[in-house]
Amino acid sequence: MDLDEPGWPLIDDFFHDLAEGRKAETVRRYARVRLRTYDFLDVDDMTTWLDPDDAVLLAAEREFLREGAVWTLLGIDGVLRCLPGLLTPERLPTSAAEARMQVSVVNRLADHLRRHLAVPQQPGSS
Image (tube, rainbow, N blue to C red):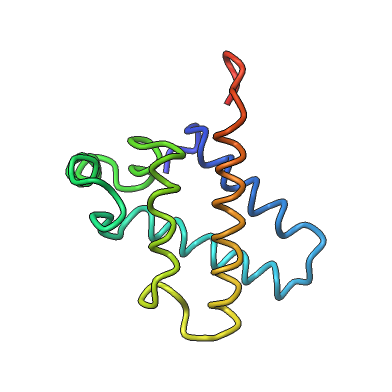
């Protein structure tokens, strides 16, 4: 992951804000969802979630840059298209509490990214 890429701070800030003031157990659950989100975006096959051309480009990009390739290549829109994959049965944790947490967090993350996408960026800002 390229920490200078504007998307990572956007996602990291979301998780930071989400965890603020929460119990330690809840913060750890949020952290696990964050790690699963990054792992999913960096490793999983995205052909189900992307159009064929974008999926081919992503596969090629991952040969050079595995971490952050979805964000770097496709930006917020690409991440939004892929996030439903985190809600599939094979990507949800087996624990019911963890699965509910992941569903809730992924939906809130998607809303957060959509709001960010809807706000026009000022020149020079991220």
